Image (cartoon, rainbow, N blue to C red; front, side):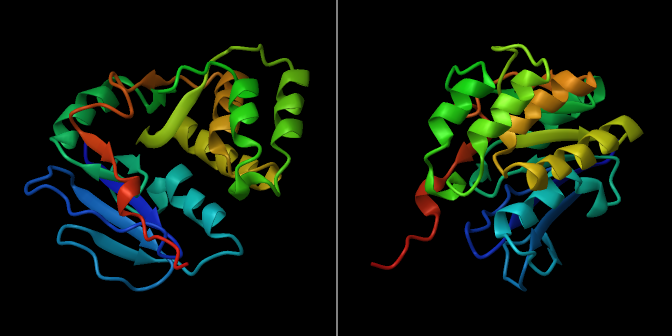
Length: 219
């Protein structure tokens, strides 16, 4: 099975990190809204930005098969740096699971808990996060059904997964770009099979969050 690594940067929000030598992926794609220099190993796809950069970046995240000829992909948020043999770790997991996400690393287990933490973040204040969660619960989703982190998502490109990804993308425009609210609802509602990366998102041997390297605003 051929596997791509896919990331996206819109509006210069994150730097692109160098990949380890011999990283093992069959393709490594950076989707961006403008031509940019990237470290060796990355292939750049320029896709002019939509109205909102956060929403534009959701398309390669939730429909990565549009950007590669591979049979599967690992979406990796650009805030992560590959620091280990990620390819060798993910391949057997993608053989067993057609969709993979992180267990939430901070211990929350309910969309209500996530909305309570996120609703006042400046980037979400224009979106109805609380109404979104209320709608999901009114639809019958049980409280504490589960909560997952989506900074790294594994996709094996079968028809069922493609349908799920397209629906997940539509949910961003329907409600909000906080995709960790819509993800558990759609998993519950659709019955989509999924697995969990067997590690902690914040502490593992394969990827490392590098928020410290994001460009800082000029004061």
